[in-house]
Length: 91
Image (cartoon, rainbow, N blue to C red; front, side):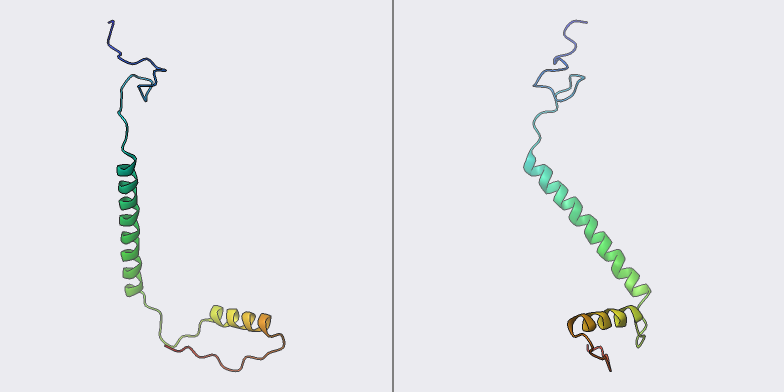
């Protein structure tokens, strides 16, 4: 079976140890295809998020206690001793 393997296991012309030469990959093509794959994945995730927001909308007029606590903490850090009297959300 002489001559079956054209490349040795440590031959720099071969990229695998079994002797199959893969050629030189085009770096630009690899970068573009990976960019396209990531863009496609993020687009699908954005559509899923938009569908979830449409299916489960935030109730109008509800008070978010975490938002109120964050505003109170930010105001007390910026202006110690200040009192919050009214918080309104503007569109």
